[in-house]
Length: 142
View 1 (cartoon, rainbow, N blue to C red):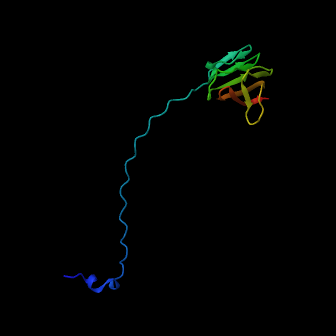
View 2: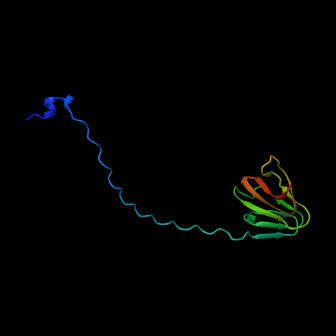
């Protein structure tokens, strides 16, 4: 038996009906488990107190150097990118932060390089950003 649309052709189709209503939304899935908590960072910044001229060493990374006289030298071939340390001038006179041989010590936010003066009770942080290349910033830094 022949289909009615085959007999009448495509010119005799009816109108399209209205769209049905949207179904209900499914339930929300369960929440995943909470990840493990990371390890706690240091609660203090260890101090390395110096009362005479001092050249930084690898174990000073992550510490603060409290200097009272003689200044601090940043040497070559000791630190890696990411190593950082802080220097506190714990005296009423200026201290020199010396750029060691083959070291570039850049003052943050400037094009200045070379030795820096840390004013009385000033504080600065030095970050090694590449081999023998450092950036220095802080309060009381000239």
